[in-house]
Image (cartoon, rainbow, N blue to C red; front, side, top):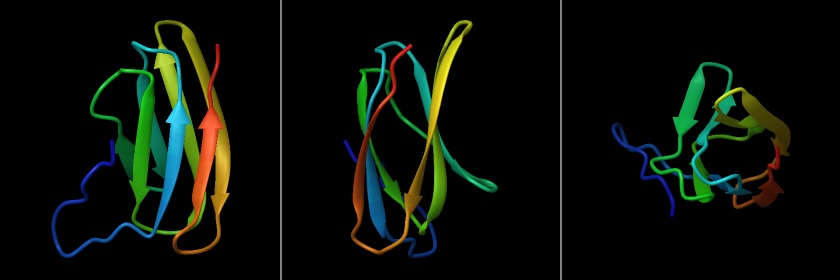
Length: 84
C-alpha cells in the first residue's frame, strides 16, 4: 500500500518498502517530515516526498527497531526488514 500525499501538489519521488512485525506502529522520518503507516499489517510502502536519509522505525510496546536508508535519486526504491 502506498500512502497518498495530500495537499499542495506533493509528489512521490521515491519509495521505501518495509516488512515489520505485525501490530507495530511504523514511521518514516526525515527531519521534521514524519510519515506514518496507516495500518499495522506488517508490510507497508512509504511514498517519499523527497530524497535524503530517511529513518524507518517500528515500535510495539517496549520493543523497537529502526534503520536509516539513504535515498539519493528520484524513482529509487529501497527495501528493509525490521525484526525485533
